[in-house]
Image (cartoon, rainbow, N blue to C red; front, top):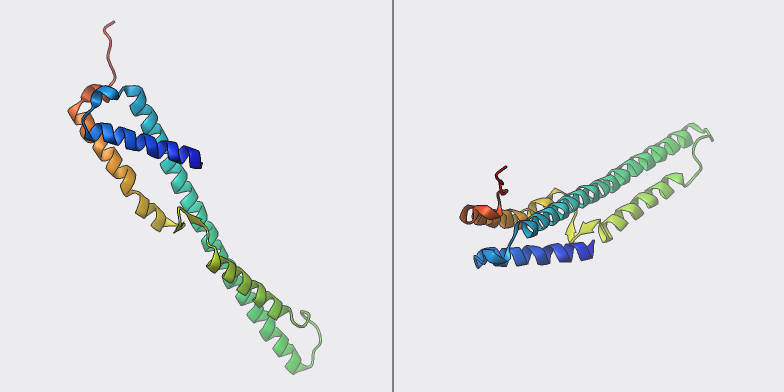
Length: 158
């Protein structure tokens, strides 16, 4: 993925430089098609990874909540049974063990959440990165207005 990202960023920079310098003689439809395809695939990959990573981060929060709730219920059940003199139920110390597991999951998420490009995965990552392809496609739109032959198909006479 890193090689594809590097190649796509290089191609985006090359096409953007040619568009900004209005050096349309170096651009052709094939280069435009390949660059648009690569940018689209890279953008879709980033969106997919950001949403999946955000789901993993949210799931770990949910697991910590459920484990804490379960440990609290076991602790209150053990206290209730101890007051009534009953000796059945969960083994002693299980509530503390479950709470320790919840604390471990929370600490793991805090120390190393799922990240992409050094940013916390989720919708904030997507909203941060949308500017780059938006600017690039805007410049390509301006180029298509200046040089429509690069963006429209050639209709041959039959």
